[in-house]
Amino acid sequence: METAGKTTITVKTIVNAPIEKVWECWTNPEHSKQWSHASDDWHAPYADNDLRVGGKFKTTMAAKDGSVSFDFEGIYTNVKDKSLIEYTIGDGRKVKVSFTGRGNTTEVVETFEPENTHSLEMQQGGWQAILDNFKKHTEGTK
View (cartoon, rainbow, N blue to C red):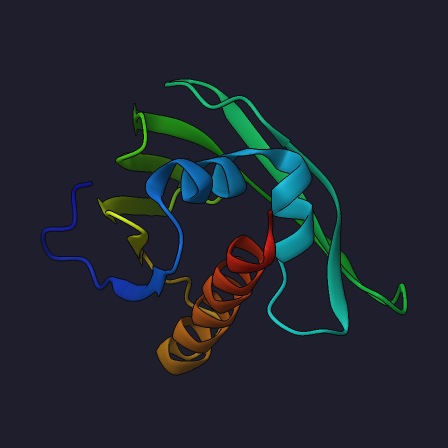
């Protein structure tokens, strides 16, 4: 990910699960519909994922009350099985997600270029909340 001269935000977590399970929960659209939201009044009613360089993904994030929704989508620029995912979001911002397995735990580090509408703190908090939901979902999945 080319970040020279650009501001980036990093969020991370340690998931109490082996890398194979973490990778499956991150990349399988049926799993991502369960964790792709920042708060309990939101959900992800739709997700699809073509995990390959040049492949596209899309997740619809929506308020449960139906008041608002948006599609989070992008194109993969680099994919290394159970290790690294890089993509460009529809607005041109770049995201890098690394996965490091350590036996029965996996570190997930997500670095992204922020948008210009919301504060950096708000963006970091939102992305961290989604990553926290991912950790909770993955650890609770059989």
